[in-house]
Amino acid sequence: ARNLRQRLDEGPRRDEIDQLAIHFNAMLNRLEAAFERQRSFVSHASHELRTPLAALKSEIQLGRSLPRSAEADQVMLINLETDTDRLIALINSLLFLARTMEQASQTDFGPVRLDEVVFAAQEELIRQHPAYRIDVRYDQLPSVGSHTLVEGNEGLLQRVILNLVDNACKYSPDHRADVCISAESRGCRLTVSDQGIGIPANEQVSIFEPFYRSNEAMKYEGFGIGLAICWQIIALHQGKISLNSQVGHGSQFEVWLPNR
Image 1 (cartoon, one colour):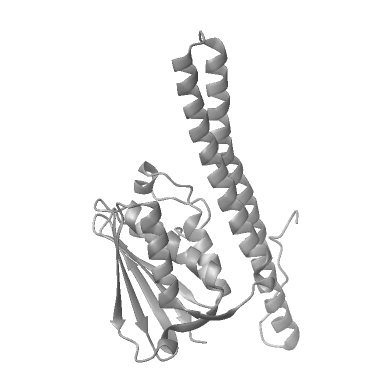
Image 2 (cartoon, rainbow, N blue to C red; image 1 turned 180 degrees about the vertical axis):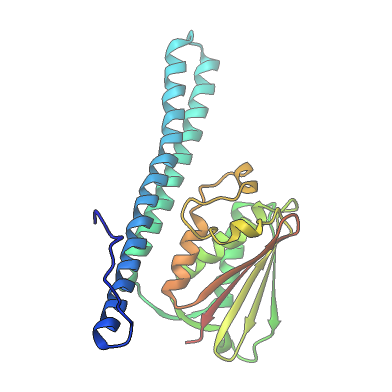
């Protein structure tokens, strides 16, 4: 754990011993990457948690130092509640991400109609945000319902769709998201598109890392955890998630999941 940079000599890479050294070094590469991700995660989590805690402390100190009045107390309590809600939301996101990573082998899988999950997520988001406009369509209308059937966990897949569609609406000036469902021979494809701020090409490679946020996204409320959760869940389902985006013209996230 103190030094994962040392590697075995792979020699001329021809005989069995050389091949064993190659595979052992590959394992060390994965271990080093895992330790580095954990160190980065702890560092970013500490930083994100410190911000609302510092705001809470400042509000309390300010309340103690100023002359007390009912109006001032009300303003202070509102600010404290806002900072507390942000802290709770951050901790809940961190716990969900950690549990998804730790309980991968214990997750229950079964047949899930992906289009039904999409419509459930659409209903929930509109109930929470009446200003959102979420259009759902089929690219190829399935002849039977089983064509949109995937093997997965309904709750986790709904979290993916909630995160992607919520982001699309949040970062679009008209709060609109376009969701397209396509049934294919070996799987089901889902695209979530928006006409929002877009993501620069040089930042797209890091967008699924925990706590990473593009420069433009900093103007909006969030923690940079949602897409990391999406990536983790889709990987758990042996699927794929990708991004196609252009600054000022919006983003399109594409999810592919294998059929049951």
